[in-house]
Length: 281
Image (cartoon, rainbow, N blue to C red; front, side):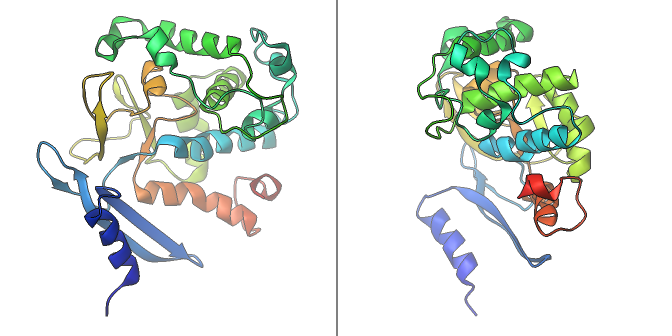
């Protein structure tokens, strides 16, 4: 019998909507589909995707790592949703942003713009990225956001913002007193039961996750870095930050993503979960 899911996924490959994908579906706690389609890369040679292909999870970093970290820190009493941002980042220069809250960052209503090509100011030529110390590059990203003019009133229109989540990550690093990936591997991913999530830092995979012999999906040819991006973060602002950020940079398989979201679903259903049901809802 024809399978409509298989047919639709293959249609996406054939029509060039995406070169390849892994689709994992669970229904009522039972896995009903887990398969790979198309290619993990197209050049220089085409490689078939597999269910074990590792993908740059891009902005899934925000809900999987960052929103989860915020929920757990709030639940642990270490962070308050309505705390003003100036409590954590007194360096902010915009008076309105100083009075904005953690809740505003999480709901993309802080007034910060969606995105800025900060990487172009800090490292004009991505091929020379590592000529600047990582600590200086990270500090420059944070400083630029501290000074960024708002494009909306705080609490007004929702503007999905990478900059807001980069700032949120900086705040949580200060609260946790740890570098972001170390905090995620030590306090977030284990509580989700998702130990196969990781960042690709400039020294390799974070958290001791082994990537030897594993297949990464390619993203695209990046003019700024002058090469095909595969096995390193695609987002250029995250690249300036060493591949590790709260807005982008997470890597993993479909299996790892499924494990990471399961505690959220369990919490919503009222089942045992490290995430309080009220935060999950």
